Amino acid sequence: MTELFDADWLALREPVDHRSRPTAMLAPLQAWLQRHDSLQVLDLGSGRGSNLRYLAPRLSGRQHWWLLDHDAGLLQDARPIGPTVDVTPLVRDLRAPEGLPLDGVQLVTGSALLDLVSENWLSTLAAACSANRSAALFALNVDGQIHWQPSDPGDGALYAAFHEHHAGDKGFGPALGVDAGRCMHELFAGHGYTVVSMASPWQLTAADQPLRKLLIDGWVAAASAQRPDLAADFRRWRERRETDGGTLRVGHLDVLALPPE
Ligand SMILES: C[S@@+](CC[C@H](N)C(=O)[O-])C[C@H]1O[C@@H](n2cnc3c(N)ncnc32)[C@H](O)[C@@H]1O
Image (cartoon, rainbow, N blue to C red; front, side, top):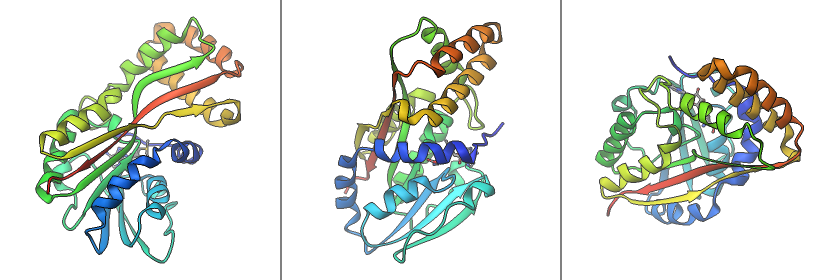
């Protein structure tokens, strides 16, 4: 089984993703990249190009981005963003990390991807990056911390079923789910990388209602698939949550790994 993602969902989350990413992550990355005249970037699971649109304008110098995704429709929305940034889409399946086109690539990156992959997959990627001396930056890895004010008596059961579903196979073996950021940190540190992890939580208010609605629908669908016996409870939870007007914090972790000198 492989995962397909809805273009509307990716478009709605993009501005929230961008405002959530920690700007403090940029200084060490920029300092490391300054030793290269031009930059080759491989963006894994790039979708519509959100990571490109966030990162490329914040890095200096000439850049070539390779956007890799198995969904050709999503890649069509990823447009070039300026005269110093070239973009090449690659319609490819990511599931075999040993075959990734890393030659000449200084930065391997991705956003909202690592929760889908397995520890084996990430371990192979870390070894390949290390052999190639590539830096790695993976943003917006969900960490399982969900804080909703006010709380609801149905939160615990819904989150438990959703997180169980999250850890199922998404085409890469058992998915890392909420452990992805921590796992990336440990695996790259094991190759002697300098690794920095920073929080990138979504802070959603009533102003983010369209995204909240899709998020709630997605959680209820996943939780109900995992626990069909509780589907009616989850539907009632959705009815309460859609109108509660509260604030919602969804935790993520961004991880930057810089190779040893
Ligand atoms: C949650 S989306 C994130 C997209 C984009 N990085 C962003 O931040 O908007 C995950 C992406 O991974 C891609 N993907 C999932 N499984 C894949 C696979 N086996 N091979 C290639 N791409 C895959 C999906 O098509 C989707 O674009």
